[in-house]
Length: 329
Image 1: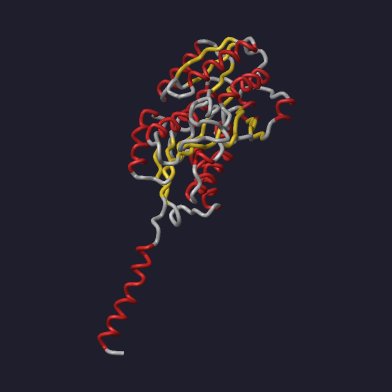
Image 2: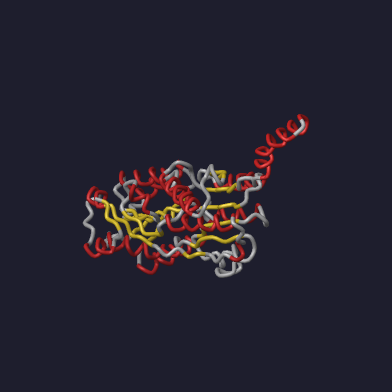
């Protein structure tokens, strides 16, 4: 071999790794839009489950997929800006959780990027999809039951505190489901013959003020209605105020009870976030949201904190304890 040909061959060989690297597909990017705050119990658990489901289906964060996180921290007016940022980032999938506010903002932001949502009411009735089995469009996700369980929560609270005739209802008017929740709670209170005081709160200051109102109204039991801000940033404050004012309260998810709340009845959030991880992986592999049926979450759990019950001077009926999925002592 001539010297000139040998040098040319060496130059070509040196370029092979660079050429191979250039031909590798770019790592897909998933946008994770969350209406609550980062780092808190509900959010941390949800993201852990989501990442695990992605990894189990071939996408490990930092190795084979990038996840861009955006948190509204309970300020729902920030969601459009955060969603627009993820659309500009040209994410491969936009995961909008955990409430209707996030889902609607995501759909307003893009008609082409695949969207995965969580809806606490029937997403077909809400207009998010054409039908549960054939969503159509660019969105699908999980229907997890929160709004539909309001009446059952009220019944459970009445069973725990049978003499109570005046219930307090804490609601965030900025939640997209606020109107539906108001109708559900009003009807449920009327059905069991209790007086219901519906009090609104959008932030920490208003939560404090709401409890002042409950105390003034001699509230005997409290329902904290479904809301992402309540469950993330407001959770510790609400649980502390309920305990301090000795008001028995029922919540939507177990994280309240793990933080010292009395009782919760609602869906396990592990199931929907696992499903979102599975669906994200399927879309990254080429599936279309229009062909992925909306999954209905089926696991509903009753969790009771006996330590809190004793601190409030409550005797939990054995029939209620027997039905509990978990009792914290």
